[in-house]
Image 1 (spheres, helix red, strand yellow):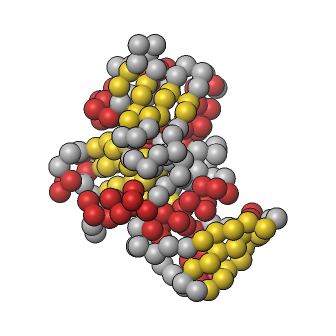
Image 2: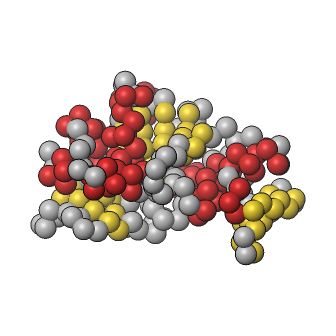
Image 3: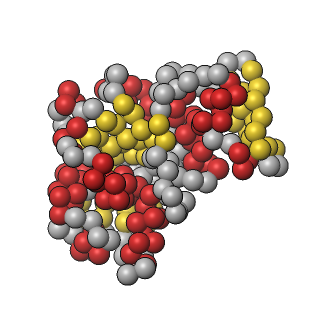
Length: 208
């Protein structure tokens, strides 16, 4: 049991699930390795790397995995499971992959190669960058790639030699699928009251 996790209200069962995927430095900060970068969570700060590697958590026997979640940070994964644990009675079937700040093709190729034909959910947050990331990751998991540009309040997407435009406040993976007719079959899980899953957990602590 780590005091930072306990202070956030994370149960012993969930701490046990993630214990092999984190370590603690001399100051007591939580460290999550991405191979070529490290996410750090301390008492008053949280740093997420821009990494080409990935952070992994879950059953090492990939044949048992039924549900994979892709997120930006380890703390988002931990917060999501802590806030939604009742929906997942068997933790042995769950696996989490954090990409860091900028998901890349190599990360998505690794997920596809190791978890074919699995349910893959996206845990990115609620701001515009996260919604763009939803689209890029959902497409990338099908080895389909696109470009996104912003012009004022307009989101422009170039996909399969066609152009699509959305107002920023209406843009989402779902809206893109409706306009383009493309179905990526990737569910997004969004926090209801915060910009990210980690922030929703931090807000819960602040109210205590």
